[in-house]
Length: 351
Image (cartoon, rainbow, N blue to C red):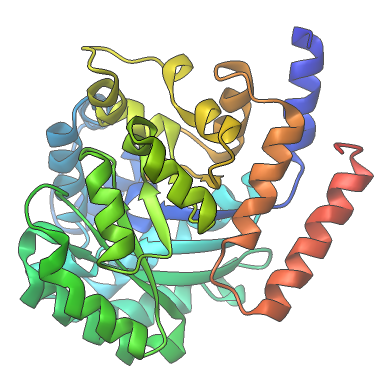
């Protein structure tokens, strides 16, 4: 494929309707938005210094950035402001469906009123406030290192607010802090209450963390999961059960996860295992994770998967379609979006 062909296909892919399944609300707060949030609370931040701090290369640096950014999310109005940043992002990416993760474990740590925060979030995500082209559902996320009792508090709130748009319960944070078995009962509880289950696994930890997320927690999707590349039998399991990995390449670069996986000091997107997963028929989706913090977008993610990782247009179309198939939408809505997606693929002559 020539460079001109690649550029043309990237442009066509950008016009496809998309779904994003691994997206943290807090990670959508860009440096200028953070400056404005800080001003609300009497802090004057220097934009240049804020932007510099967003240039992370290690997981501890990213966690410090995440803690700092979320420290300015103090009121329901602050969360509503964060949500107000999303419509422009979604419209630019042609993102028609998103499952957005909320760090409810962090809200509880800061003794915030989660119900009030979520009411403000839901109102801000209504059509009246700009969400005219994107359907959203929410994932309540617990922080692994905070322990199972705190995670159960998040789970109960997720169940309580299920009718308000919470579709799943997830767990993130430090994968190596506590074993999956500590959280088995919590995942069984949310499943019994009709919530879906996701887990960050195989990002900074090894393949066993992915296997544990599937076999112990009953996770239905794996956030990141890149360390699966080191375990052939695990990849066979992912294929057999059609268990998708939510791949976020730029995130893996900026957190140091890719460097750790490869055993190098500095990693490159060209070395990401995504093409190997695709070649092995491991189900994958593409997402941005924390797009403002990692200075990326969904369209850029697809373009770089082609230009830096060598995926073909046909492969990327299949991955884009998979994001709808692996969503937690009701079957009728899912099929409707899939029909629209396939019609767009045909119209753009991408298949």
